[in-house]
Length: 534
Image (cartoon, rainbow, N blue to C red):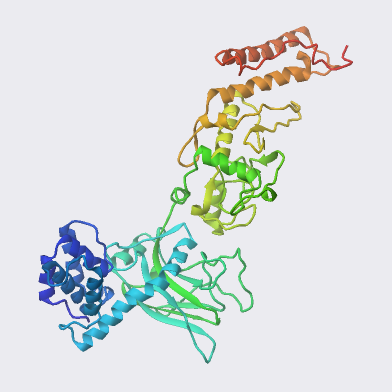
């Protein structure tokens, strides 16, 4: 067992000010927030536990860090402005070159200090890949413990045997009482996972187990992804982590053993995670862009300049005709509620954000349904321009009870109109809406529509009724009666009253608009009457 911290150094801690206390806690990789009483209480917790002392770097490392901070605060060292001199003194003292450190203690302190400084540049990329592999799990654990939050076993490479061409790793890990209680009391929310990544994986943010892998914890085998040699995993493949349940682990010291028949370089990590909800994962998606930025991005995609780098020449400009864009999600087949796409998508195709997150809660692939590009929550873009378009269409459907529009036509300038095609009502050209008119539609942080101007909704209803009257040429055709149908006078009067009532309602709404924006609807049937009807 590691000996306790000397009483001399415990007393020195009480003389330190808050900046020195936080500086020492940072060296020990402990939480630095809180008042002076909280910082001193954190030191007392470390002094009373030999396990925490060992995790902080050892007895000599802790004592030397406290002694150096006290020397600086009392003025024994050079002034704080001489940062290079201070770092040199600190390095010499912690490495064992000071006069008060013996030869045996200097080796331990040097080894602990060097491992803390030199291992992290390699560990950080691996740890970031493990955390980003599954957004539905977040690191969890006790914030007061030293080290990275949620990490039980740091990233460790499997050791290759030169004789057998096999890799293995046997390592002990410690579970504190707080972490063990989290796993036992709420196993559905908290899990202890063992993850493995291929260091040279072309898809960085995913788990990848080696060929013929096997995992044992405290002598008990655990199920792991088993893959035969030669059957390499494709780019869309994802391996699940190994979950260490309550029956295989104990509070205190445990042992894990990993073995495989693979010569590639792999790295394993054990961490404690907590499950994220669908709303928490959705909150990781960046907020929608402002209207000017969304309009500019839309115009660049329509003109074929979205993927241009550097100076744009005449040869790079591609002039496209009007684009017909589908508003249906390719996953569910329903109209998108929150239109989104991945950051690397080059087309205007969209999918529904909620449906995409619900799908990846089961499959964990996080690939675009259109182009197959990997896109996790932080790589998804909410199309705020198309979100405003969908808000206008939904408002028109609720007010006029019109048919569901699933396609729109967009020009290179951003002007758009719905594509209406209904066999029962025929086809008619909808009114074009300029991009500047969409500025009045207000979006929320998550892409939801908060407000739609009334003039955008009333304009579609007037055009719809005007086209209905002018298209048929008679009231009989407006109620679905053909040239050879026989209708009574009572049916004709009732049909005429329904059509004119709708027309008067729209005309009353349009009175408040200016003369330039009013839509003139002709009441004459002779101009648009079909030839030969007489």
